[in-house]
Amino acid sequence: MPTVVVSAQQEMVQDKMQAIILCAGMGTRISKSIDYKPKCMLRIGESTIIEHQIRIFKRYLNKPPMIVVGYKQDMIIESLKSEDVEFVENPEYATTNILTSLWYAFREKEIQDTVMCLPGDLIFDDKIIMDLLETEGEITIAVQEKQCDDEAVKVQVDNNSVVSIGKDLDAKKTLFEFLGLFKIDKKFVPVVRNEIDKIIASGKKNSYMFNVIQCIIDKGVKVGYVDIGESPWEEVDYPEDYTRAKEKFKRFKWRN
Image 1 (spheres, rainbow, N blue to C red):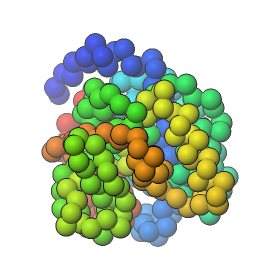
Image 2 (image 1 turned 45 degrees about the vertical axis):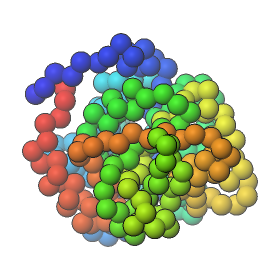
Image 3 (image 1 turned 90 degrees about the horizontal axis):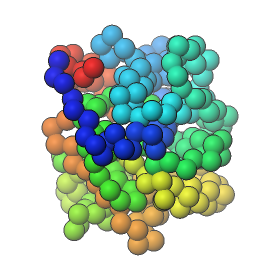
Image 4 (image 1 turned 90 degrees about the vertical axis):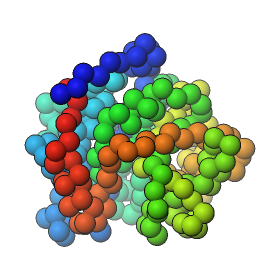
């Protein structure tokens, strides 16, 4: 397998970054076809999605990942009992969405580090993490240039920054799809936390990550992006996504 050289900049940020993995959801669009397991427990090759994610973050970060659980949390916690991770519960998992899970993570711990945040159903090449680590800016999102379908979270960019993000954007006018993976600089974490607090306080607990990102853009904050190029990834929402993920990563050479 290829050797990955970690740059001096990556070494510098390792001690100052908190990964937050959001695994509380019920996965209703796929649950029946996967025997009602949490999506993060689906196997891609010899490991589950969450095991792949933890392994990747162990390579780059020295802090234990924080995992937000809810649906069938005992199954997830038991499967990871030998891992150095922290768990946070979203007790409202059945009636809320992924943004509420991040809200519970911020409530549980006063995070003073740069944050790397992602959903627990995302399988990806760890080169994407390397790309994000090398960026600067208040918020940076991972995107891929592609023809988006209706379900995709679409991204419009201009002058090296994101100008619009959401599912309802015109696919013909967007170049990129949002992976669900993004980085928040430590100095900007309180701003993001405050915006999430406002959304939750307004009763919009079913909001998505892209909703808070758009709120921040609307306030004039520059949101950057990293185009991951041909790096493979798949977010598992539907049965066909899982089939595609298993095929896509069947021969993938994971880095040690």
